[in-house]
Image 1: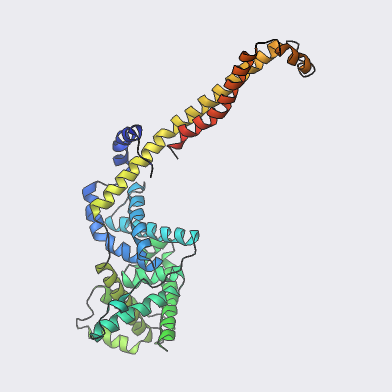
Image 2: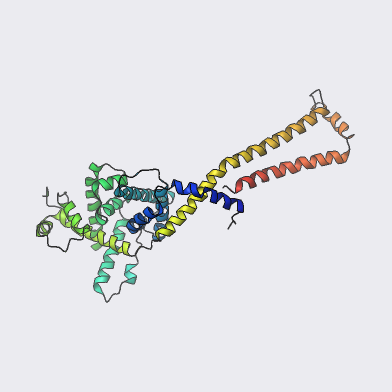
Amino acid sequence: MREVTLSELSRLDAAAGEADEVFQMDEDAFRLFYERTARPVWAYLARMTGDARQADDLLQEAYYRLLRAKTTYDTDAHRRNYLFRIATNLVHDMRRRRHVDAVPISDELEHADPRQSDAATHAARRVDLSRAMARLKPRERELLWLAYAQGSSHQEIAATLRLKTSSIKALLFRARQRLATVLRERES
Amino acid sequence: MSRQTSGHSACAHEQDIVDLVVGGRLDERDDTLRAHAAECRACAETLELARLLHDDHKALCEGAPVPSAGAVWWRATIRARAEAARTAGQPITLLQGIAAATAIGLFVALVGAWWRSLAPDGIWLERFDELLSRSASVPVPLVLSLLLVLAACLIVAPIAVYLATADDR
């Protein structure tokens, strides 16, 4: 690893004020926003990439890009939608760089106690779901997750995925049918 | 009400079902929607999938190993500072490159001028043999030292430019 020179350190200090200015929110506002959104964003990234470590990396990157974005937000919901849009783009970029398909990240079955039948059933259902989701197209996964897991409205989904609001209903309907079919196939 | 009560058509109540699940109000008594979901295949399918996905979402959120807000903020600040420093350093690097290129050009021009002074009529190629013989009259140590300086410049200049720009890569 390369050592940092004194000139670099002085340059970093000189640029410190500049860096703080380029962030779109102050630290307190960021903390509040982060506490509300970090877990859902991580869950979204984890399910879309199928990789918990990738989700960790992309989470940091998503918040960095949000902080550096020049966008002005009317509401907190707008900022949240924008964050999910960044997260979606990051997953798409990652998929383009190297072919990644969502694979189950869960090891729930390994951790589930077989004596606790409810927990085992629940874990098995989650594994089935993650494997079924892995067989869907990325866009279908995103639609279903945003709509049914997070409960986003059609307007919010359209804003996040850059689609027309009027097309969400039909796309969601088809995605839902695909997931139901894949799950039925797995059950049979 | 659904246009067709089959899994192959949309129903106007689907969003209400999703809201019920996401809002955590599934356990509350809502006979109207429950009764409807029991009859409508689209809503039954929506209910089942929404429960499955929302439960998965809840479980993932509960176990999400997210770093603290402070850590994320700190890393972002450090990265922004580094990027700002890199951006600020770019014009300097460019100037250093231009200065190095200018110095090399000047040196080559001086060497060229000196060379021409040995053959003022400009047809030095034709008189190469003559030049060689004339250079033989120049003291050997002087020629050798000039050649060494030229070679050193040619070797050192690219390394100097590389070192000057390497920090900002």
